[in-house]
Image (tube, rainbow, N blue to C red):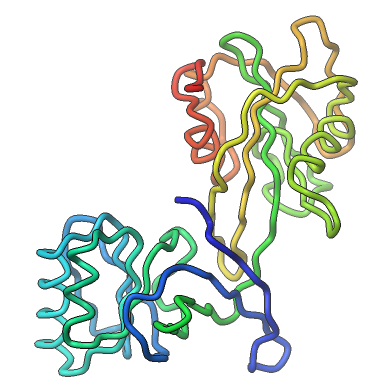
Length: 268
């Protein structure tokens, strides 16, 4: 799912942040409530989530939309709002007909059950309280069927001891691709990396942080000597099928999938 738009805004809650997501408006209204995520193939209900706003995680057709509306009208007597990740045109009509506040085209990975959100059906936005996004790059380096992985040191601020590709924060004033080349120079000292492919952004939530990762696929040349910096304690070239033998950082598999990498090859 492509990230349509993200902004970090100061929350009305003192000292907190909230994140503004931009998607498509289906039906107007401004409604606040607590997120309840639903599986792609069904409808769930939870009495432990008051004022719930369902997030439909999978592809939503008219039949599923009708079941969702019926379930929540019956159980709660109140229809709040709905966040649809990937609806079809007929599903959108189902929500427009009774005038239910609804928005679409969001990455469900950005939401967690219980998130406090404000849905604006006119603007097509969702605000998530107490969440801040961090933009990062994920630079996958491959030569033929082998992938470079690096073990994060205990001096970095997250995921110490886990295996990863070359990563880094996108600094203010930088584009993700600029950051990618910079991180390759700093972390593994390669002089002339070749960019092969850029994937769509990948979202990962961990508590109050939403990691928005921009994946890139690079080649550095078979004879290039890798020199790691203080952020890592070890590195290895592995077959992509061996990745499951290592404890990796969250989201790495999603970045590989975004680049079309499944078994040591990638889709152009």
